[in-house]
Image (tube, rainbow, N blue to C red):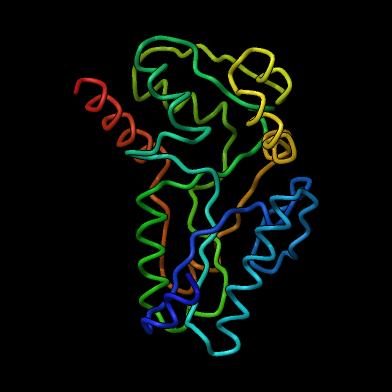
Length: 227
C-alpha cells in the first residue's frame, strides 16, 4: 500500500486498531500512550504503524492513521457489537456478550469512522500522525444493551461468555479463532476507554450520540432482516 500510494502520489489514510497499546489496566487511551502490546498481533500492528509513519517521515508518501475502538453500525456484521447482538435482539433470542460487561467499553460508530477518515485525508495538518477516532462517552456494555432495549421497547436476554475458553467449549468460536484471539481477549476483561479529545479539538469532529447511533443500526438490521 505504501508503494502504491507513493507511485500514484496519493495520500494513504490507514484505519488501525487499539491493539498497539496492549493492556492498559483501565487507563484512558490517548495518542500519547506508548505502544506497549505484549500480544503477537499487537506487536505486529505496532510494527506496521511505525512503518507507515516512517514512510511519511522520510518523505516517501503522505500518511495518516486513524484508530477505532470496537465498531458497530449499519452493514457491520463481524464485530462484538454486530451479528451476535442485533439479529438476536430483534428475534427475541439471547444476545452474546463477551467478558465483563459491567466495565467501561468504548465503541466506534462506523459512519463516524468513515467521516473522520475522510477529514483526516483532507487536512494537511493531520498527516504524519495517528489519531484516535471519535467515540461517544464511554459506558459499559450492559448499558449499551439497555439502550438497545429502550430502542426496541422490550427487555433483552444476555448470554454472557466470560472467557475465550468458554466460547470455544460452547462452539461459539471455532478452535482456530479461539486460539488466535485468546491473546486479545483482555479487551473484554479490563476497561477499554478511548479519549478522543485530540481529534475533537483539532477538527471539530464529534461522535454521533450513542442512542441515535444504536437506533440507526437497529433500523438497518430490521430492514436487512425483512429483505
